[in-house]
Length: 168
Ligand SMILES: [Zn+2]
Image 1 (cartoon, protein in one colour):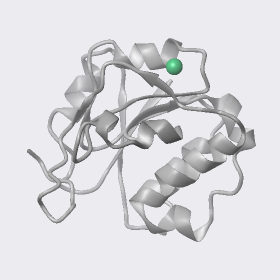
Image 2 (spheres, helix red, strand yellow):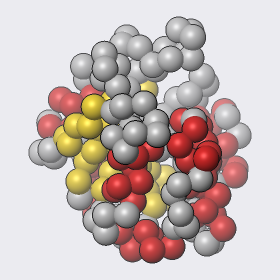
Image 3 (spheres, helix red, strand yellow):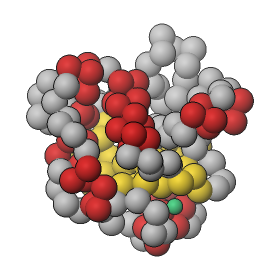
């Protein structure tokens, strides 16, 4: 399982990569350009979703936990993830009742990928939120629900800084 870490300049939290390497995994770092560049976050995701390989996304502000990556790697389910707090704890968002999963600490099996429709919609390239939602809608429409692993991982996102990720 490849562990990919898309990030933009100065937004990669210092605990993200050590939390991956401490588990014996390699962090494949992608410094991202703005969309619609193929080297943008949506471009990198699109590439890996079409790669035919299992992979796990760990976002630039998400700190994995000991054993969490091996659990995702070993689980037979096609779409697995750990939740993390948003502005409130994930379980208080109501999103879990809608089979929603964020992308920040999520493993996709290659077996899913032929099922995914085109990844070149405007929404795919437009906004951060849109990609989570498009993947959720596509996978839910196939009858696939995200398989949540516990415990939740850490999120170093500072919502009070103009909704932009910052180091904390
Ligand atoms: Zn699982």
